[in-house]
Length: 115
Picture 1 (tube, one colour):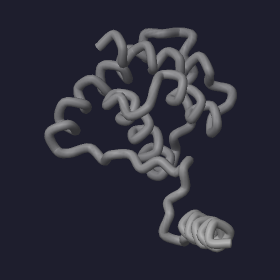
Picture 2: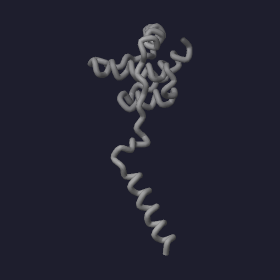
Picture 3: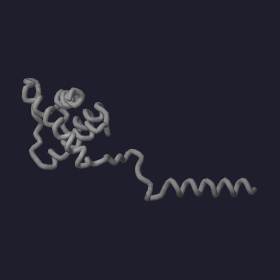
Picture 4: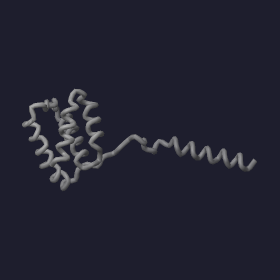
């Protein structure tokens, strides 16, 4: 009888612990924002990658025509450069917004490996 009560209490504790509103989602990832020092190291590499796209006839520019899109793209490149995401994650996240630009995301990912 004691075991049944103990088991019921243990199950209740586990259930309440799992259903707490303060528990972060497992798939929710929080990325580090660039520090001024990292931003200073990242910027020249980003410029080199961007400039290399001008010499590539196969590269089609993406329409980053709003400040929000530019901020998103720069953040995505920063996370790749800072190794917060993998090359595959970079490409997948990019294709989720720009599905017709696989070549461009692969080119950029390769560019960060070169520079």
